[in-house]
Length: 418
Image (cartoon, rainbow, N blue to C red; front, side):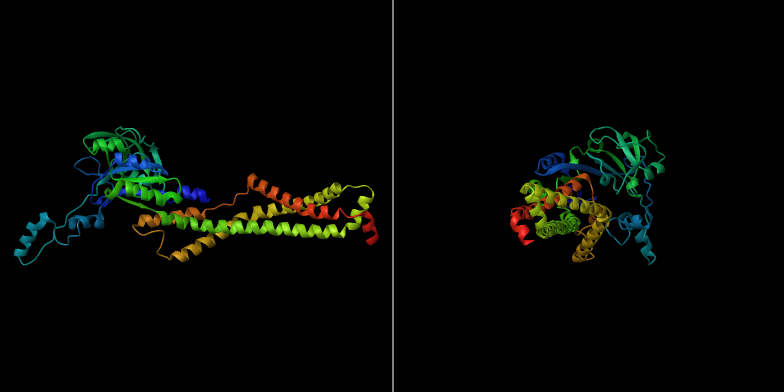
């Protein structure tokens, strides 16, 4: 489970243009040539590239399915920069109002744009949802440069589009290949195309606004981040979720440590108990051993008899142990994982969820911990084979040693003493 978590959670490095965060900030876009170099960095398994743009009435016939409401119109009234007075084109109305001794604020309306994303690899994060389903049609081939797109179900409903329908963007006709549901209204107002197609249509050939480098394990995330940062320099902001990943793995590492110590303790205790028990049994049966030797039994045969008895009792105990283990495995595992998670959460504090930053980072941390808590005990043939082999070896060694030592006694001495 630890290996699985390390290869699937927190093993990504986010790369964005320096100074940019989504459609905010500034800076220059990354290039496909830059990211091709990132792909060659050690421990990087793949690089997901994307280009995001906005469609409005100037370059598409699509109508946004999102109602701006008071939150959306807040940017329009404030001129998008937190301006608390009337926007520039309303200054004349304000001056006219001031002649009568009052200042009037002009209310403007705002229509949210449609976000269009081009990507070279389709993942759930590309759509903007935690899980994606298709109500009709199918995904696009992100490796092909073709005028096809998938759109969110809200946008499709607003514009009366279905699979096979067309819409215009950047002066070109785009065919709807599929309609998806990403689980939230904002994501379902989006359009997704292949990266090369959007670069061509929007006259941004070679440009990339964000990328995600996938690392083979979270153990290598720090080194890969340093290498990518050195490679791209000041042109990119490179961050990772290493702390989030560590928080997800810590409970599993605790369970692993507890399990390892328990296993060593159980094997050691079992070996000692069997050895001491067989020593007592063999010593109490010295007379029987003397009789066997008097009638011609060899030391090896006597030792084999005690080994057979020990193995028989071990098999009976092992069957009982397997039944108890199979029934109790998952409850015990869940208890250990939950207790470890609780301890980790208390140490990190209620506000520390694997890193600061935007809410998306905290959401990733919660998903990571949720995945880490989903641990199931596996009682498979391999586990049983290891257990069976260990038990038999301990039983054989624990019974053979005392039997071999006591079998060397002389029959006459035993019979005279006993």
